[in-house]
Length: 455
Image (tube, rainbow, N blue to C red):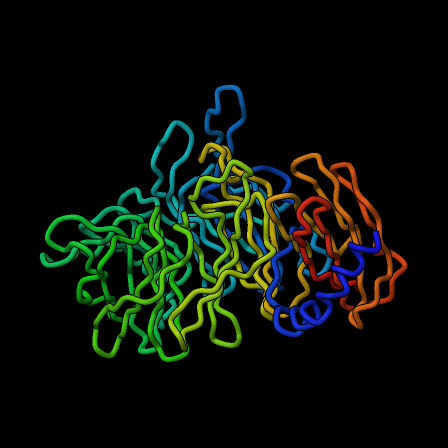
């Protein structure tokens, strides 16, 4: 043991330097699961600050038949709990949603049981917890996106490439179909974003003569095209940067990222994410950086990967934020909760069938303390849950290791030789502050160092 303690003390300076340089505020933590599994659902922030998740589908073994949902539930950010809301009139998956200027939520089109495509539009009133049928699309539409125009009307695009729809400010009545000009088509699996010049950018995957050309809509719904992108981006992540450019990230199976400049109408490449990411949703931070949380599509037999990345527009590069090893989801839905926080809901858990859906939810907090932090090496894995103050060590090769717990001054507060997997150390009883846990392989002397914040 003396030899091990000497080795640990010899790296104290490095440990303290690690504290000074690696204390990152960005964190992702699991929160309360939804009542049921969901994928291809929608999420919207209500006027009272709560978040509603609705519709989508799930599937269960052994046949994994899709079960389309009309159920709704509401998340309270203060208590991190879910409560049921009134059911929609129609079961909907792969549908579109938007919040009107009056604060009501519209559920638009989509697909119902037996893959029946829908034209119906219904409206949710948070004040009365009721859904009301209000309108109809000119044709059935799904797998699209919608945004509010300056006049309160609604622009909707979908996988129907030759036209788009305009709805009234309440979604009521028959929506108006607008035909696309001959030089442009609606991209497949499109996403929309409003830009600072009041124009709207539509990005997705495209075929034919308009290959890789995003679409620009004006407020009067005239159409233009951007210069060609270098990559298809079905279901991309879109985010408005401080300089007015739009970050276009990923897509169904690419890690390519690009920038759209609304002044020059040009698209240029920028730094790629480290992993290709499915159904990527971006989370703008208050400091101008952009966060992306997604398990990606990189096969990992352990079912986990580093799934939090931050884009810095000043250098045009993504940085992996270490220590977020979750099973994770893809095709999830995300909503901003204010104060630098985002709620991440559902999708499909890594290495599972896409149609199954997940009840898992997470909170990204750009100013928070990491809820679960993890470190891994070839001989062990260390994880710490801040809510229970429990640290777990898993020895991968059934060998032995030495554990030491340090305070920020570099003093050894506790040591233990470990021989078993799932060994638990409790930080309960230690005063609030920053600590370090060090696990040392008794055969090689290799160390795993993990920062722990006790609250």
